[in-house]
Amino acid sequence: MFSTSKKMIVAGALTLSMLAAGASMALAEEEMPTADASVSFYSTYVWRGFGLSDDSMVIQPSMTVGYKGFAMNLWGNLDTDYYAADTTKYNETDITLSYDGAYEKLGYGVGYIYYALDSADDTQEIYATLSYDVLLSPTLTFYYDVDAFSGAYYATFDISHSFPIGEYSLDLGALVSYLDDSEDYDEFHNGVLSVSMSFPFAKYFSITPEVNYSFALSSDAEDYIKAGSADDDDSYIYGGATLSLAF
Image (cartoon, rainbow, N blue to C red; front, top):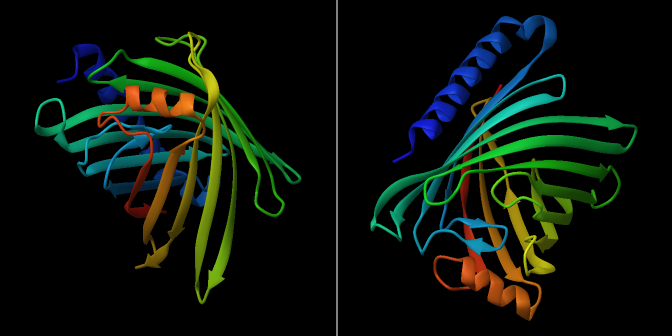
């Protein structure tokens, strides 16, 4: 179970989310805020190359409210067969505050993430991202830990492209990363290949099936990822679907 401080963080985030959602509805005609909610179902939980569940499906709800580039997101993870206890367990809540903007074709963003974890120390990150609106939409993102893993950073470079298929589009993506844990690991870390397709329905809803392949980029990364994964593996083919509501 969450500690008292974690419960307070989650309760506070939920309260702020509901207040923001209410303000969004009240100001919708004049200022056009945004709100969306989703729930994802994945065959396993993979984060930055690490397998954080052991061959068990995870359910990941998410809610975001935004206004004029500012946004707050509340995200969680429910492991349906938690490897450390052989039971269903809600073991993570992330709160993200962000701002995104653009200047001509250059996109930019900054943000803050609080990770409330049930089986490890809570931690916090700040991040920045740059993208360019050209073919393949190249995007560079840099995450820096300012709490439990102070000094550690994770950088990604990714590209993506959409291919129209009738009234839908097939979305392909590729990512490479670099990880410095601020101790004894400093390597090109993992890569990810992804494919997805979104199917809108009933005006505000969509369902997006996807398949991903995450793999280590070096022999040192293989060892490091295995040591940090629940199932002692370094590569994963996993997939699922996300049901979304946006208005």
